[in-house]
Amino acid sequence: VRKSYREPAETFAVNVTGTMNLLEACRKVDSLRAVVVVTSDKCYLNREWTWGYREDEALGGEDPYSASKAATELLAHCWRSSFLRGQGVALATVAMIVVYVIPHSLRGSQLDYSKVKAGGSAHEAITTGR
Image 1 (spheres, rainbow, N blue to C red):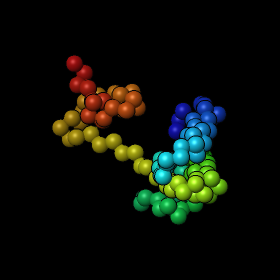
Image 2: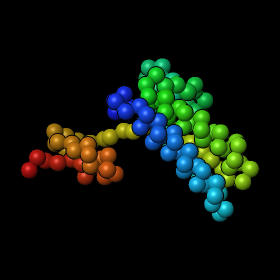
Image 3: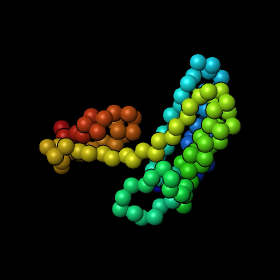
């Protein structure tokens, strides 16, 4: 989220334009039957609730990252209605919540977030400082 304030255009390019490019490529695959677009729970209007958001909640976006995720949800809905449904392709969106859980036995270790961002597991990202 912080990076989206420094680089808002890149945030929208990656999240919205990147998704559009992917969905356009999907339109050209005759054998395709389903697409899942994964966004973030940040796509919903932040109401500071203590419980999770539901799929029928209002979209929001007071920061560039959240707005780009809400725009991605709208884009996916548009492509589903305008193009993919007519081709017999199902499209679903999933708004994920990212949770990192560090095993109790490893607490106090140093966490290397670059390894998590690169696709490694949280366990691989934990170092002992040795």
